[in-house]
Amino acid sequence: MNYNSQSSGGGGGASPKEGTPSSPTFALWTPLGLSHLLVLRTDFLGWPTGEMQAGKPVLYSYFRSSCSWRVRIALALKGIDYEIVPINLIKDGGQQFSEEFQTLNPMKQVPALKIDGITIGQSLAILEYLEETRPIPRLLPQDPQKRAIVRMISDLIASGIQPLQNLSVLKQVGQENQMPWAQKAITSGFNDSAQCPGLALDCRSVDAKPWRG
Image 1 (cartoon, rainbow, N blue to C red):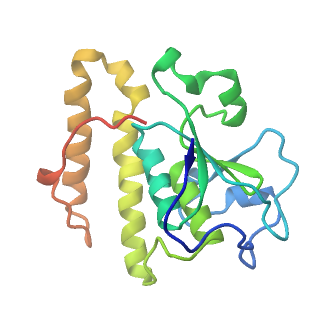
Image 2 (cartoon, one colour):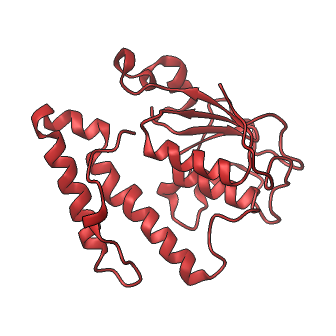
């Protein structure tokens, strides 16, 4: 299954930014902290140097996963041609638990993006990598304060709201409790965030339903 973007700009072929670490220690470096960057590859032989490795990126994704949609939107905005490998989180007991996928991503989560000879898990880490290696067009504002607000909102959702009502958590609370649990996590998260300076989020406009992914 191929995704062919009709937009242009920021595609493959860009070289790593000057100063990018040339060893696996890059897995420990990110402006958002260690928890947001995880480079996964069981046969890792070293960070690609010089020109990036050729080949179309491959995104392992689930159609109901909002985390995967973040990456799909970023790839489309940057005009990056890629392939999708669907990973159904429900079918067959969860295809993310298959031996083949666990070899690719031991965390057993989507999205995972194979690109430039490495596999990256966690959607925010993928977005950072795309922004740093293919900076045009930009995902983040140029103004540092506006960038901070974007990152704050991203962290709020990815770290403060979504994990509390993700599929793995909902399975633990029981079928009858899933919807109220998820709604409480989403609504309280946006309500609390509305008190933060620079954020104007109104949860009344949010459709508080569980996210799958």
